[in-house]
Image 1: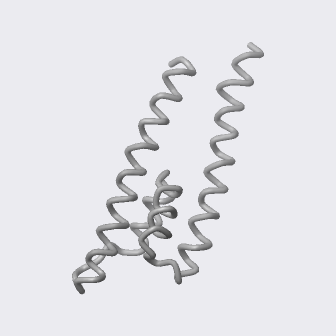
Image 2: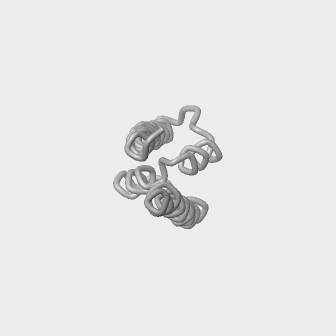
Length: 101
């Protein structure tokens, strides 16, 4: 698999998981207002950890959902930092090291 293919697949994955994160966050907020069964917090954090962290954090702030929960307002930015480090390592591996070969 070439570098371009890898990054296209990664971008597609991030797009899809971001859409899932947005839908899950908005759905949970809507259900909270209606007093219905809600998405477990662990599920929201897993979606965030799987790559939807930026979209989820922005959505939470935009719709004012779970913004008083430290678990989310500290946890999701921490997840974003870890994800940025992983992406930096992937870029280093697939771009920098590939150029040296």
